[in-house]
Amino acid sequence: MNTTSTVDTAQRARAVIPGGVNSGQRSLPDWPDLVVTQAQGARIVDGEGRSYTDYHAAFGPPLLGHNAPEVTAAVAAAGQRLDLCGVGVSSYEVELAETLAELVPSIEKVLLTSTGSEATFHALRLARAVTGRRLVVKFQGCYHGWHDSVSLNVISSPDRIGSPDPISAGILPEVLAATLVLPFNDVNAVHRAFAEHGDDIAAVILEPVPHNIGCVLPDQEFLSTLRRETERHGSVLVFDEVITGFRHALGGWQEISGITPDLTTLGKAIANGYPLGALGGRADLMEEFSSNPGSPVFFAGTYNGHPAIVSAALATLRILRTAPVHDHVFRLGDRIRTGLAEVMADVGVPAVVTGYGSVFVTYFMEGAPPRSYDDLLRNDAALFVGYRQRLREHGIFELPLNLKRSHVSYAHTDADVDALLEGTRAAVQRARQEATAPAQASSTMGGVTR
Image 1 (cartoon, rainbow, N blue to C red):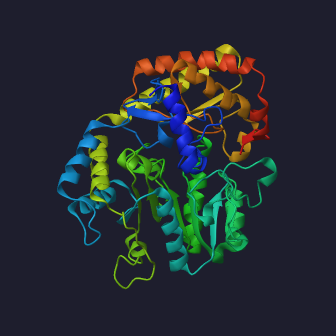
Image 2 (spheres, rainbow, N blue to C red):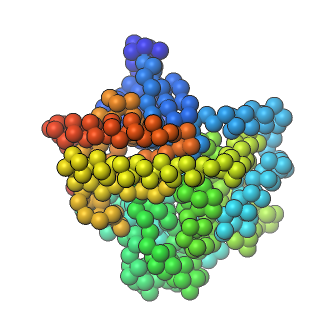
Image 3 (cartoon, rainbow, N blue to C red):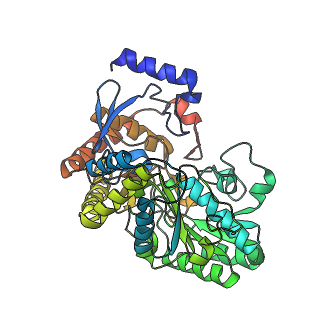
């Protein structure tokens, strides 16, 4: 493709697709005609043939890198044998369920979905059904998908913290009122919520690491408190490990922390980018789904357990178990975080570089690593977005949206890290020198991009 055909493709997209993209955060204001034509390993190619080392990684799924050969081969092989039948079960589904039950501490039984949002939806429906209660607790800055119960208080402006802040129009006020939003890592807030509402709290759901606002690491006592309070009050504890699952450890953050939830939701890295989610947990809870004949909690999905997609997950998990994937991405992640901190100090830009394992993010603010969303209100959103826009000039792609994390894959190399550090140095210096564009300024409120 060339510039003319790229613009033509983007214009055709906007003519028939609202906004020209199929998900809300794929449209970049400063790059409205982006067309992606190829993805392989650690790189993506745009419609004009320019190659970028990709650290956005589609919000994290391709842990092995784009188009990992073993995964695409497994998908093709499954497709030659079996496609969607919509009845009974396939050996692929059984093998994946057994593998997940072996790897993830909380999972005794598991059901497959197509997305992480579906998994969290079913988890909360199940919790309300088995407890007979109304309220759900979530935490400011955590994202759990598109459904109404949790579509609030992710990236909020300062004046909306502490009150319902829906991310979409069209949500009934009474649905919002049934969700309590607490500050992350705040043990006292958890105690107060259960003291006041404990008899009506059906579930507590959280990202054990709130990666939808970059990387805020949990205090162990905070997670322990959630486990104790939910057990004491008969509430269901749900770990949303759609991001942390498999990327940080084969058993997710629950393996790292030693805190076992009642239910776990999975997605993203489970199938290296193929559309698969999962919900698993205690057998007595999972047996309440209607996939078990006579049970009351409805569960269905035409594409659940599609053989080709499940084969992608099986291949991905086999590689994660047998190849030094985590050793590699953790080592590169450590190099990146250390190197970025040195770069920011060298150029005199106040910054906090944080992350875990293969995830990294640079917040442009002073002080200690963040412990809650409130801490991130100090982040310089204009610089955060601006330097990532400038990274493209150096053949590097990190998503230019405020607070978004970046990822290392098994396909990235030490040479890629060297180029990232060099490119970041130049991009930050240039972005700092440039005046904030009016459009960029109007999209930030109190340091937070909406």
